[in-house]
Length: 505
Length: 89
Image (cartoon, rainbow over all chains, first blue to last red; front, side, top):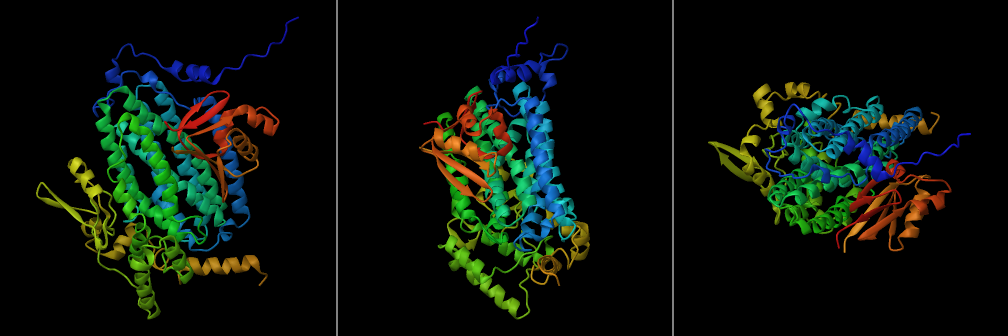
């Protein structure tokens, strides 16, 4: 009689070798350079692709199994949200603005990252790298889809969600994120990995997803916390891939160090500017706040980013060039950006508002050295005007930074009373910047950034300054999607429906 | 000295995993935040399969961690029996 012998299960390392490395082959009728034409022009030298290893050693079979489970969990909650009037369980209708920023600026970025990883997965010769990039490409499209799907439940009831793709491409406060991803996708494969895999995933997504999603939970938004954490469960793998990529480049050849350092300097600053949106979501748009932007920066920027750069010092890496300027702006950026959104609120597909007394007290407690001194007086003035029936509006068009594309709304790192503005002349044209960081990025690659499409000049070039025609073009419905939250349709509906949900009259 | 950390969703599946991490890492500090738990440790944190299995009373594949993982900080090293996070000393 045959004895049934349990098949010995493969160990993690053996399984990874068989199901990753073992899938590769040597090309025989074309040279490697012909098959992988983009891998050398950036100057990164690689001697042994097999040294690239995924520390999690995740193989495709396990990947599908765990991703399927994440999806089942996600849809169970999304269904419950839709079936139980989840859109009325949020703390306040103001919170919706944070979701609109997310859908307009961030979700399309997930889709861009999907396209980018599909491409670099093809362009890298190493099998370990190819498999990891393939998984990340699938993750990123899953994130874009689950986010759009979850937020479509809000689109049924509220304004500002319906045309997120147009808003992403054309809206002045979103092109900061669009230009970040366009810049990364038009770079070479190694630079793309630093831009997305390292700067965005490792240094920045913690600040975007973790405290903000915890905030979504705190504000009763089960849909968002679910897609957020479902996405973030993949991010841990992405961060690890980004860190692995940077160590791999640095270990392969000492000549790679200056190239990698230059990319870190560039992409830290590019990412930091995208965080301008996030700081505002955290400090102003969450009715119930878990922590301030400053507190989140202390944990995920100073403590974790600091630990990371200390760790990489063994390879000769130093903290990114803009690090000190970033630190100096932490206590200012959310206030400056919210003031920007408010004064141009006729041109935003979301609502902004004047913070209440309670909100302002919270802000002064969290920003004791800056809020009362520089920002409360401005809000008080704006509130006084509003009480007189004169909403403070800035009908002048903001000057945009040629690199990050944000309006030049920030102040000098060492003087918060002085607006920060830099300019460079290149081939007879003058270009404007919001900061030294953005000016340096431009000056290193001027031919790239002179081609940038900027949203404000488009208003004049395409529509001769006709704001109404511009609103149609960005799919902004005047009087519905834009303006102050107080008196908006969103406010009226949220309060009325919530009243119906909690009473019988 | 730098801090390594791991953050997990706060749910029934992670409760025993967090207990196992506390057993294996007496220096770890557990921070409970809305919907998530963040565990910090000086320089090094180890997650052991065996300790988790003792807590949950069934066999556990360490890769199951991916389902409820939110984020981490530190260099990752994983084999069949443990997952370690560390920063270079």
